[in-house]
Amino acid sequence: MLPGEDRAARRVLTVCLAAGVTTLLDQSVLNIAVPALRRSLSVGATDVQWIVAGYSLAFGLALVPGGRLGDVRGRKPLFLLGLSVFVLCGLVAATATAATTVVAARLVQGAGAGLVNSQVIGTLQDVFQGVERARALGLYAVTGGVAAALGPALSGVLVAWCGPDTGWRVCLLLSTPCGLVTLWLAARRLPPARRAPAAGGVDLWGIGCVAALTLSLMLPFIRPPGSVRTALLWAGAAAGAAGALALGQWWRMRGGRPPLVHPSLVRSAPYALGTAVAMAQFGSSLAAGLVLTLFLQSGLGLSAPATAAVTLPSAVAMGLASAVAWRVVRRLGERTVTAGLALGVLAFLSAALATAVLPAAALPYALALAQLGSGAASGLTVSPNQARVLQHAPVEAAGVAGGILQMAQRVAAAVCLSAVSGVYLRNATGTTGSPRTAYTQAILICAGLLTAALPLSLLGPGHRRGRRSGGAVADGTGVSPADQAPRLHAYEHPPTAPGPGPRSG
Image 1 (cartoon, rainbow, N blue to C red):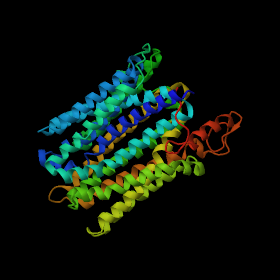
Image 2: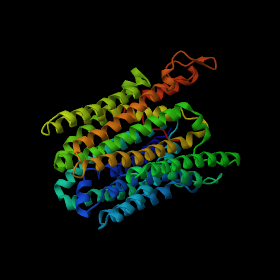
Image 3: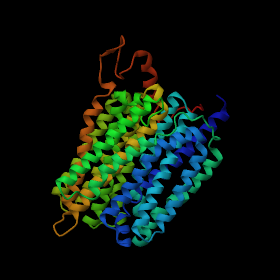
Image 4: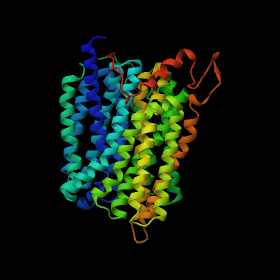
């Protein structure tokens, strides 16, 4: 490999990481500013849920069609377009004078972010190969996760400096300089667009069905059903959307056109199980962070800087845990993901117990300790789980595996944010509302999600020792000895470990 090619690959990676930081920081930087936003624009609970969940919903739904369009039209123009939309809508949201404007701007901004990140995934797969691809994708996931964890702390500082009425607007404006710098870097460093012939087009039916299914799961939490009949109607709508999605996938496959979800991904148990774990971890983490900031400010009366101080240990612990996760993986293998989930459950349960029994003066310190455990849990889970999921993706679907994984995470985040915040907002307000009880209930839901993911993480191929498949023993990784070495090598050189530079594809 020529030195110039190595430098070019590093520059592309820098642009992709900058895009991930910009779009994922924007998701969480608003958390601490939500109470100030509510007071400034007289925003109701329903609008709050749409503002925080709508971004993730639009983000997720734009990923797969954005990736498909990037394959056909070229990635660089769509990257620049999506990031321009993202920056512009950030300006609109920051200068809004009505809640509906913020909701609409955040929806379109989320779609722009999804378009950008779908090109990031495709670009990393184009430029890097083999082990270096896994490292690049893992570094992208960890960088975005740390940026998201830092968002609340940064938001608290901005609200403190600028005041509540201006602070939430500055938080939304934060994406502007970050986005402009990333645009400049992308225009200079991304490889030229390469077009490929279309093969079956974008599965718009599948995207529509996923949107309908997600909305049918979100809306009952945003507007609770007033009767059993209404609840049954929502359940029927969700079942109908799921059935229509399955029927549409079958019809496209029968016609020889690529479906939204490649059939081999559905048939791959390691990929499906790992994706379910990622959905539970991502959704519960974002939802827990949101309700924590709401509880600290509206329930305990903490200032924005004090709230930021409570949430900061999560970002620090996630960064440190991500840096050593590869060492843990070398010792525990895929059990690292299970250990991270278990630690996350303990952190959520300890937060619930502290909220139930401790006095208000001691509670912020206890919640800060719980945040330390929660951040470490995320650091041990995110990158190792993504590496496992993508390495076990079928070869014929490797190109779409990353996009489907991110879409699933974002859809889960939209549902979890609306559901968990809905539980908190309904039980924390009113004459009989209790913020402590509301936060305890919300965080227990998050703990339940991670608990449900625990057995799924144990079903991965790395836990099935001694079984033979095709005459070869699956020793620790669920793959034959011929395939085992490169998979283990990918774990031994994770995104945060020092090592040789990326190789261009």
